[in-house]
Length: 248
Ligand code: NAP
Image (cartoon, rainbow, N blue to C red):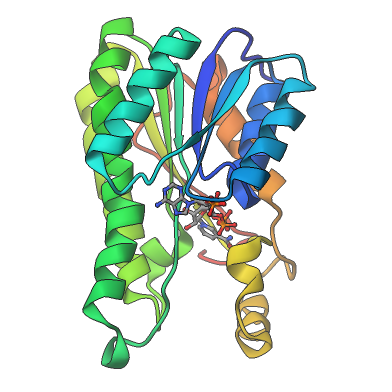
């Protein structure tokens, strides 16, 4: 398996779900992990305690990634307190699902601000640091919805498609500096986000998955671990679907 000893990682949205699994996986491989969350301090502190029990450093940071200044302050604090950043996992995300017919402007804006602008805010503030180190890993969470679209998710699909364009652009900018930038497009993964769907919606989604089962947060974490490793140093600008065949 891969090895990340002495690497420092920032994982946004690591209090719960996919982000928590990613944080624990990176820590299990030896990385120190900054756990970023929006408001759920109790869950974030639980993640930190689980990471520390693996013998590596961890700290929780409350930060709304949609704020450029907050993201800037967050990254400066992590660089000072951890001694640098080697791996950035832009995982935090939200949904506000609704057909466009009744979608409120503020719900479109908020989903773009957190998912897409938040990813930019984090990348922008770690960019020069990684460029100077001449090594880095940026891994962005997109979605199969960003590839295929989905009725009721025009805001979310636009944000997740935007993340793919941003991933490829920044990958081209940083490739010669030893920094890789990749995206993961999960399918239907069991977390709080998908638990909120109606049974009817869940049944319809399940019917579209060739593997006939939901994915787990660990399925995504394993892919992040690979992309974060030295073994993936020649992979950049890629979008890896982890979806049981859903978006084939
Ligand atoms: P989740 O269970 O709803 O967890 C969301 C995480 O994001 C929480 O840690 C939350 O922090 C954090 N967060 C939300 N808004 C934030 C903000 N403004 N600033 C900083 N952190 C914020 O989500 P998930 O299902 O694990 O999804 C993780 C990522 O995978 C998302 O980008 C999502 O779009 C993507 N994805 C998920 C699926 C799926 O099936 N689950 C499929 C495709 C893509 P608090 O706990 O403090 O609220």
